[in-house]
Image 1 (tube, helix red, strand yellow):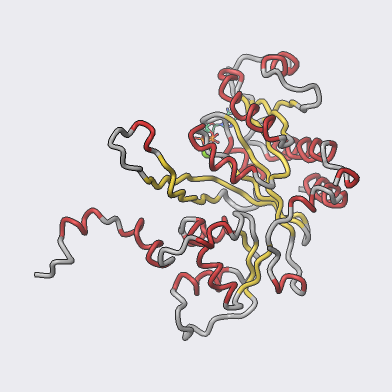
Image 2 (tube, each protein chain N blue to C red; image 1 turned 180 degrees about the vertical axis):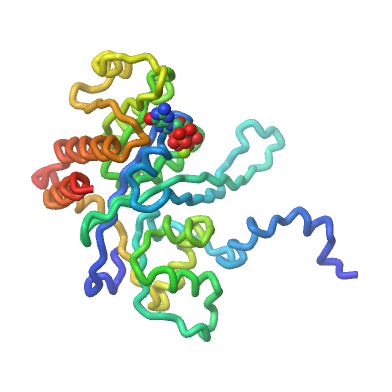
Length: 195
Length: 124
Ligand SMILES: Nc1nc2c(ncn2[C@@H]2O[C@H](COP(=O)(O)OP(=O)(O)OP(=O)(O)O)[C@@H](O)[C@H]2O)c(=O)[nH]1
Ligand SMILES: [Mg+2]
């Protein structure tokens, strides 16, 4: 639904990017480094989830789950506004991911070489969904240094998936990662002919 | 003694958790109507005398003098995003705000979008 009055009102187009990766890998840090506003936090309250799997009482359990997400914003002139969402770290929040990933232009998967496996679920998720993504290896001090090719191999990434080093605390570095992502998404865009 | 009220019960009800659902009056159908990045902008200010507008509605109208996403409104007003969707639905239906839904299917086909975003990011 594009709502009535917007034809006469000049509103920017909102575009969504995701910053994913394991617990504590630097998602919020990266959002904050590139955002024009201090990262904000929003809560999605999800209800009517059946969580009765291990509930033997036979009574359907309805639960309310609240998931907090950090996000930031980058205005691109008057015409576009990018929203960067740090995905909730835990896998049990897949259902939020589905909502977040819907309509996302692409995703950054942050990886930490000390705990590389932590980003497997994110990589799997975006591969399965067909969401364009890049892998950014966040360089923590004292983390083992690997060749990017080795990391790519370890993650079993497709040849075309860009992988780069980053420092999530630095704006320049975050910018580079986002540029790589948008370029990659451009290369993977559906062509008009296919529609 | 009022049988509807017991101090024990009141302690169980955590006001900050309950309040939003009171504002939204249990309506959930609007939840799917707006995305987290749907943008809202005020097109008609409230006078404060409107029937059926809660302080939270008024706060959204004031906040959206510039276009803000559902996620931003929720963060600024410290309300769950789902509640903001419901309140925005009310305001939209009554002509106080315009809402622009994201159109990712169209955006991904728009070459100019990629170029503008890349140029914008490089210029940051
Ligand atoms: N040395 C170093 N520290 C970093 C870097 N990025 C993040 N950190 C630190 O790592 C910690 C975790 O960063 P966050 O940005 O909170 O990570 P997160 O992925 O949002 O964490 P969760 O949301 O809890 O999963 C913080 O103390 C950061 O300051 C980096 O590039 N280098
Ligand atoms: Mg975080």
